[in-house]
Length: 179
Figure 1 (tube, rainbow, N blue to C red):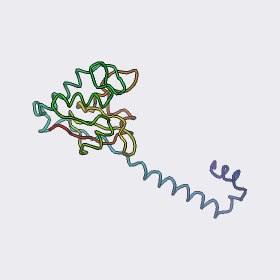
Figure 2 (spheres, rainbow, N blue to C red; figure 1 turned 135 degrees about the vertical axis):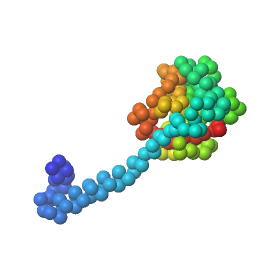
Figure 3 (cartoon, helix red, strand yellow; figure 1 turned 90 degrees about the vertical axis):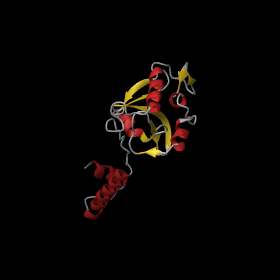
Figure 4 (tube, rainbow, N blue to C red; figure 1 turned 45 degrees about the vertical axis):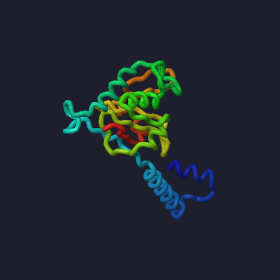
């Protein structure tokens, strides 16, 4: 076994004796269990249909937020950008929600910490990504497991699938600034 060979080279003790072999395998098993417990990844839960969303049941505020974000499609990413010549991710969400009179904090992390977390994202809600308790990216949920966002340097405001492994792995939560 590779583990035994590694241990033999590092610790010149005979691993053929059952206590050492048993202990090393038991410690490895415990380490794997502990690490598995650390990977409590939050799932991206969305709701695209039902009485609150079907047909014309989205609020006008949500429709206006999504419309403003769609108008920015193709706009270049610009770090710190909050205007029509370029947006960063939080600048895009600030602009879209500003269209309905809702003021959001400047950075994705400040938005994440200022807004109440919701369990299920609906079209128009904010989706936050990062690691630990620090949001480094935000997008607007558009329905059908897609979000609109300003993805980063050298790119433009675009639509992305939430089923991409990166987004699933870095998802922190959602918030609903609009009714």
